[in-house]
View 1: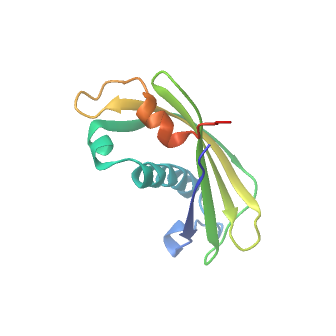
View 2: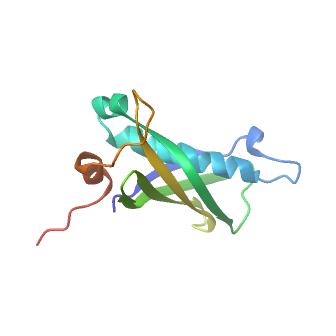
Length: 134
């Protein structure tokens, strides 16, 4: 699996009435880091040819984050089959290394022109998964 990481700085608009990052913001970051990963590794041609939609989110919250904290987001594609891809995301406090959030999201690949589900082919699998060779 090829891991992608990204740093996120917490802004005042991320904070809720309890003075910590709102749970909905974490979910947005889960989607944002997935998109950033795709945009970092996919060619311009692939971005024109394919699109992704979320089918399901599972998210666990372990600790809080606060204004001025920096979050390290880590993501990787765990498995892909047919038209579906399972992506994992973990969000950590960058300074302490403490795990804040763990998420698993199921994505569906679409043909960008027809917006219909499309089988995940080898070109995408090679981007997301390391090929083990001896």
